[in-house]
Length: 98
Image (cartoon, rainbow, N blue to C red; front, top):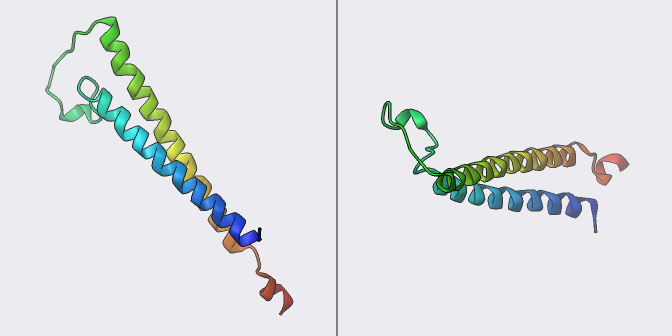
C-alpha cells in the first residue's frame, strides 16, 4: 500500500468513527432529554423532577454515554485533521527529486 493510500485510509476510518460517535451521541441525548435536557436554560423555571432510583439511572446512563460519544467524536476529528496536516506537510517524491 502506498503512503498516500495509507493516510487516506486512516482519514476515512477517523471519519467513520466520527459519524458513528455523533449518531450514538444523538441517540443517547434524545434518550436522556425528557428529564435532563441538553439546554436546561430553555426549560421551565423552578421546575423540579421527582424520580425513582431506576428512573434516575435511566436518565444518567444515556447522558454519560452521550458525553463519552461526544468526546470520541471530538478526538476522531482532531485525529483526522492531524493526519491530513501531516500528509500535506510531507514532501512528495516528485518534489524531492527536483
